[in-house]
Length: 371
Ligand SMILES: O=C(O)CCC(=O)C(=O)O
Ligand SMILES: [Mn+2]
Image 1 (cartoon, rainbow, N blue to C red):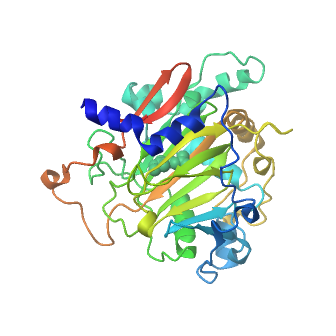
Image 2: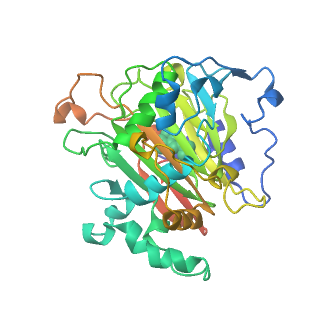
């Protein structure tokens, strides 16, 4: 036990995690890759081809995406199977996914961190319950936290069991159609024609949040990619290797950016040590200030967000970042192994158990045995 604590305290990944998490003095960000300026990373970052014919312009548009030929996608030296797509969303459409994460996906039967210590009656309709408090926020910044502000994660589809680190047939509710459609398109564009979104973990970060070092290995089909969508303030994302001593690459994830972890990069260690609140003239990132004009609402998956809803989302997003990860759990046509064989042991370091707590005044989304 002591040895493992010592080991965790000293590995290379953990050192870098602490470095980027540090508040005083703040870290130097000059080694953080920025895919929005790929020319500054000559020899490390390469443009990568996408399947431009996998999704028609019309199908992309319905999901709020630019035509694929306009997307910018990159690979990273040393990380085969890792793809970084810089914001492919049409102006204003990111607002829709933010609203879904706050208003729609928080509804029952989806499960959230608040369900771990509150009754179902207390946590249902948490958007509506938070409205009075969120409206007050505009004028009284110190008002008590609303349920929305206490939200740290939501699970979709096969609801991840943080205790057993497994997914199972008896913890399933239908995966949202809109996010399924978006994920299917993005995966196909990256060369995964048969990807089926079966589980989602939504993470809600505030300016002082972080996400511990982990590997996502509980899915039963690692030949399928893991998709990660970011909205709101930027994050520093750390990408490591199969061992915690492997080199770690820090990179920014800005609003609208998508990461695909597949192939040899599907099971690598990663973490989010820091949220970087931009200090330009807008209270929220520029891409969230754009409005979406939906010319064909009947035919579209992505819808315009009402002014009333966006006011609440905007208030929330001033200090927040939302990340949606989408996973395929089972091989096509496969079923879960029996309960007995499902209780397999998982590598300690990759425990994916959230423990939200306030530590030294900073809120941390922590995975057990990390940090
Ligand atoms: O927030 C992120 O960018 C990463 C999220 C993540 O790694 C996860 O949910 O497994
Ligand atoms: Mn992860």
